[in-house]
Image 1: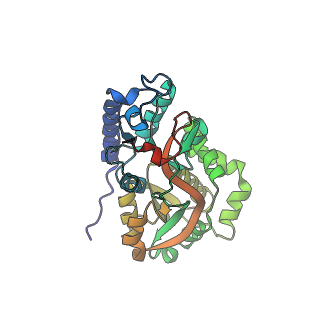
Image 2: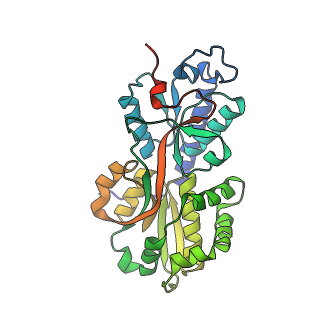
Image 3: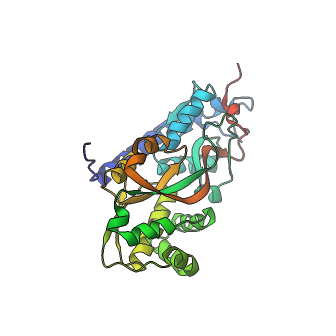
Length: 310
């Protein structure tokens, strides 16, 4: 298999910026800005109000594949899924909410936007997005033998949506991710003790963790990096990439592990492709969710409400 070149941070940043500019251009057009409060026609369908656009994230994300499935399942052939990035999606959401405009986005929890805004999931009776998911930790083959301290800690690490939310909100409010992680460790010594119990600190071994640029995964990487470096004596490097390269990197050993594997649905294709080439260390968080999300003021409760009346 051709080795993936991870020297792509600059490229990733440029494509994210380009995606934000494209989204900005899309949202400045005619029909997308007919607000819930000031819409010219209260009888207009939700599709007409948002110009039949679903604001998505990066094209490699599993939630984008699930959304394409939802478009097929619910007969939403006149809708367009807009590719971009997580940052571009939340920026577009913020702009819409400030104007009380309707908007439909791809969303997931845990995410800080559910604390900042009054949002709701659209019901998914056809189960296009499946049921509640889990975030798993995956590791390359041989990590247990090469770095047993890292392997044991990553196996031990499990936290809650509330704990992740605490860290994500701190980062969103302006605290640098590294400092937010330090603050979390200082505030929760008993949890850190649980995760590191019985592990003898190493002496300068280097471990590389791959993660995607989602707020949830930035939070988990930052916390784990802080604990592994300050409590276990490891040097932890991060590789911020998209979902496909993340799985490939762990499978072929360019990264040692990742805490960002969403299963069983969001990353189902990657799991099917790479499961024999890596170790699943189990769920580090349970009860997570993905789906289509709208502001609470939008007059819709189900994905079925997105179907235009014939």
